[in-house]
Length: 153
Image (tube, rainbow, N blue to C red; front, side, top):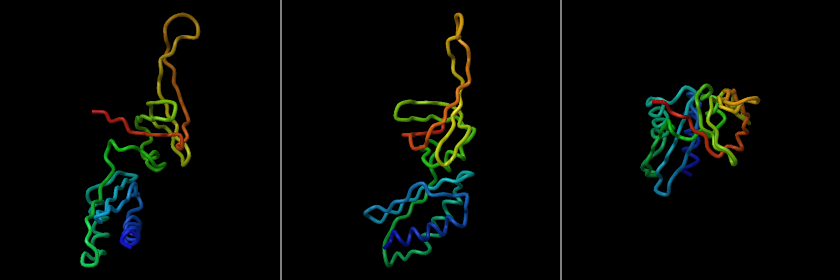
């Protein structure tokens, strides 16, 4: 009952700001509602407050006691959805698949796949020494176990 009400209110709140999207939503045994958002242009504190108010002001604590937490995905949070990959085009990311680990610049993202590009040092085809080569790899989103933005300080 509470989950359906919150889902309806959450969907309405997200329609108010189409750049926001839902990453995670759960209700614990003690009616602790936890919502994690991301946005095409990031998520502001005001965005979280707007979504929180839209839900909280339309639920009756007399009817059902609850706790509500609305948060944005942290900078170190894994990238999971195609929409998150699209918003991170141009950034350096780390991708783990079942059989490899790659680091590179995310250059393309569709609903099904991403494209990573990076430079690598390889032995020269002829002679001694190494040359720098540009690498490019298409990776199916379904093959990705984990992906994270590499933060630079």
